[in-house]
Length: 339
Ligand code: FAQ
Image (cartoon, rainbow, N blue to C red; front, side, top):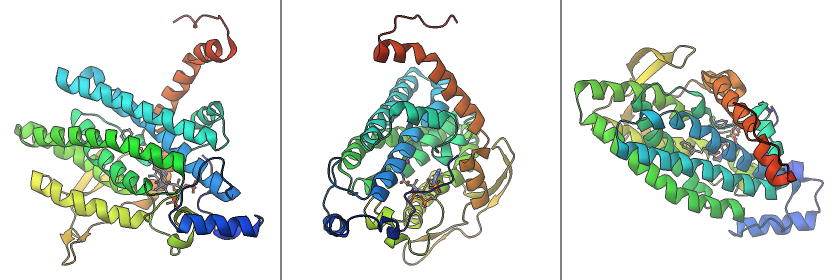
């Protein structure tokens, strides 16, 4: 995994840029202006936007894998159709985001190769297992819920192609979220066994979903390029707080309990105790026990329960698709490898 952060660089890293062009760029962005691919931009901005869009694209195509595993096992035809459509949507989001990234200067093939060799990252949540149908409900409710919350704020960003893509993706994510809400509601209105299945899945997904918004804020987060140049418009902690304010009461209303958990190396829950910190303050903000940030860093650096499995499948798919790429891009007439 890449250890360098372009987007996290301080604005001083733009010191080699033309000061006049930089001042005009900053004024334009601060006034709510939009940047298009052919406009002048500091190199730190271009690299930061590329890193963000590429990370996002990677997350969409890897994110399709845990749900894709459940298409053949969906509990009804209606659920199977909805899940198939959702998985197609997520892969489509990946396509759109790879296009945005290509315009920022990196070839699609290089991005796919960097993903399968572990040079670039994707979202933490997709490195956890989905052992039951309850996990699919939680991915669509909690993970898509977190994604919409984040992406609505990204749609207020400054980079035109990314902003327009967010608007389109958000409409589809809203549908995924509704479907997830319906799945959770159905399980929590069902038998004792269905309720337990749902609770067990909630225990597995609550903390990864809190980590979704990224690590705790750096002290000067708002003056660093990601926010100063409107690559992102809210801090990680403020999005996490908003997520808990929305989902903690919703979970409790549904009859779910919020636990602090420990997990084994396979991502399955070993112990759970009620979150003693959980309460709603007078200002409407919920207090909660913070995620285990050591686990977060371990997972995003490749040490999560499913990192190897997810990347192995992407590598397989990259190899299997080689003859198609050669046919389309190089006019090759070679047939696919024998099964
Ligand atoms: N997972 O200083 P920050 C979806 C890394 S799509 C992994 O806060 P920044 C739809 C970060 O890259 C979800 N790594 O960084 C779906 C940085 O690494 P570095 C994808 C993470 O950029 C649903 C380091 O930690 N959405 O869910 C994560 O200012 C269901 C320090 O972090 C996007 O990608 C994480 N959660 O903020 C699909 C949205 N968080 O540079 C299928 C666009 C942080 O040290 C099924 N991206 N890191 O190597 C963003 O909003 C931002 O880039 C953040 C990170 C918030 C991810």
